[in-house]
Image (tube, rainbow, N blue to C red; front, side, top):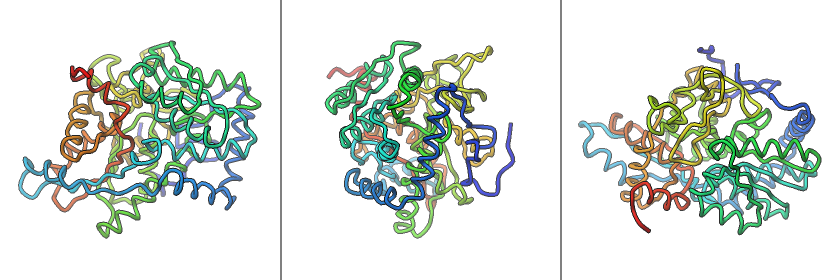
Length: 413
């Protein structure tokens, strides 16, 4: 299935929340009034200068934006060593791992907590996989004095212990979810059940650019600060835009945040990197929904999903707790089918190797999520001309993953 390319890639979604065939709002009747209220609140907020000013103030003075643009000189030289003559692109990182809380997630959480206050909500709930969104949600809830409950798969609770403790320190109540494989999909299911039960006072702060409309749009908009800054910074550093953008894809919020401001720049190639897990040929051994899935409906939107022949959603697998979601944000599905963005897999092994490489060569410990994107940079940069530029979103830092990586490497701590 290939959709015709639109005149502008930045125009969506339509009034029903669709990006071509993807998106929409497939929710219980109980939730529809809440979804419509949220849509109205967001449309009003976008027109309110005071809302924009407060968010910008928090981004600057609380989050620490703009995050730096960093030329990875030693990594660039390392990748050029074995490259053919004249090959080896310059590698830049957009360093959103330097944000307060250690990832891009805070950008979206600040925007949504302001919406929750605007709507008069007094209780915050969220789902989390790698724990970064849970930490960011607990952080903004603490900042604004609102009670917060986080749903997290039991499997992820075990492999993301540092973030679990951070959430508890911040005052959040954590609910381990044992259903299914105890990962992100299952946590989102439980959060939706909570929301249906507590419709009056509760705001569901979704962490990725998925879910029913308007969530994919508003999460994208709050995260697009990444791409807007990157454009300005790259023009200042190099006098031109990058040739290629690269970001990891789970649900896809960090990626759409980087990609969206560049979508209509036709000379900029864009690459999203999914979790290839044990390999695409291993049954239920990966989480690459756009390389191994097909369209279906999950968590309120139509998108590419990992599913069996009967349409049952598969669990998927990734070494990374933030990428083992069996679907993807609907805008990414649309960008895939229009051909504007290329989506490729990176395996667990490739991500582990990239994790260690960046740590040793640049003194930067990445999260396992962006380590997948880095694995693609490691493949791609040596094949590109030396005057080409790759910009990768380094969307999270690796503090949360060091114990998990040590186990995978057989290292005792």
